[in-house]
Image 1 (cartoon, rainbow, N blue to C red):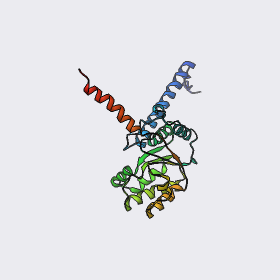
Image 2: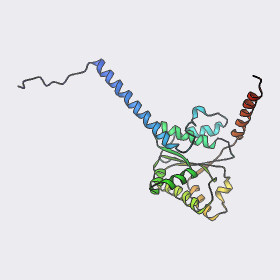
Image 3: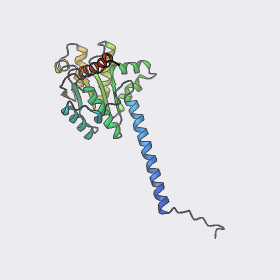
Image 4: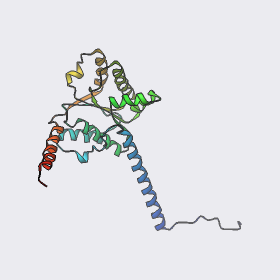
Length: 232
């Protein structure tokens, strides 16, 4: 027989429960840290990280419902969306809220624009890695399509982003002030080639409503000018 007792110590029920609770809390914190890290990466170069369904102003309930359902039903086969309409109608906010909703569920996503992509490509040691990161994430949002410079270089970047995304088979959302005619019947030959790729899998949704930015300016003016004119 061995000269000493080799039995492993056994935790009592209370100790076991405390251990499990501590381990569960550690896993919860690690998950939250991972989500917040992904959020910082998803919105880098933008100011849209705070756009969530919780703070939605409720001025376009149809758009909000569309965005919430997109998150709830999201999978690898989710459709491409084109959110189009006038300035300030909530297109970018809704797209950013979708990204936040998916990040909270553990998905990967990116909210970006052509100007940000152009800067990242300019600074990158590997352009292939920039394009690869845009095609790998579960959802890519390309914000404000149509405001970029219309040059051969920018058109090439846009085509590559759309083409890589199509090849990946993963969902994408585009926001734009372009009209359906601009999208379906572009005058420029290079844009015809690009829009053909975009329309291949996309479902368009018109975002109606007043320009929220103008409403915000009116409220700001009333408050700030009133404060400046008020007697102390």
